Length: 224
Image (tube, rainbow, N blue to C red; front, side, top):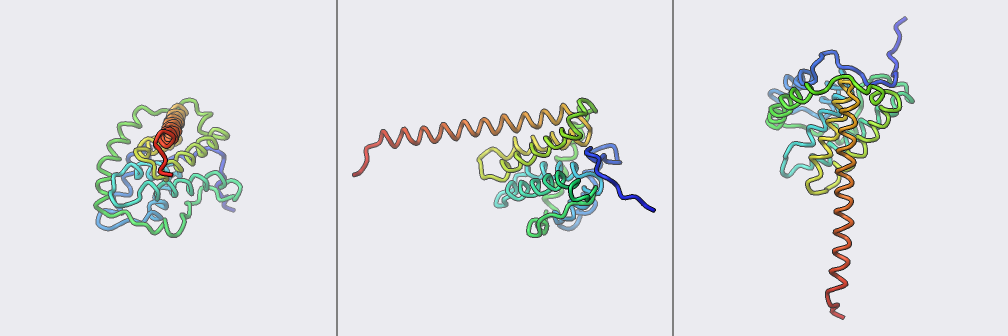
């Protein structure tokens, strides 16, 4: 009798070795036509859910005037990371995640996908040279739970319309996902630290802006 794969609390490993090579699989699918986000989810989650998170984080870095890419990718990352957290409870094992219908039907145009692959694959190829297995307790068990929570919190920041916040939150998500893929706890820590620094910076900036606005209204003469 065949046995179903069980979730052991460790991130799934890609079988291709190179994360950049795994990313390039989508290039073949979207060479001449748009690709839906659900198609991307099925391509990447077949190898590893963190690889899908890495793809979505990179997509959040794409400049796309007129398209709420940060909002869409942020919501998708939240859905995927939350699904990875609850998968052991639902006994889903490594089944590809089902994205929310409206978001899953969103298409990545072929031209945008080509541009994305043009910068994403060389960038990840250079970055992964510095990642290697270390501090592996941070990528399994409770460390994996903390990593997913960190990704969810940064995805919330990515989805919010905060000026200039998309890039650092997206990079933090990419670092955590790449750390999970390569079992590099130091990479996961770097992503978590970047997210905390970014959140702290914008929190201080927001508080300062509120105080400045309050001081200005106190200083200006009231019309009544």
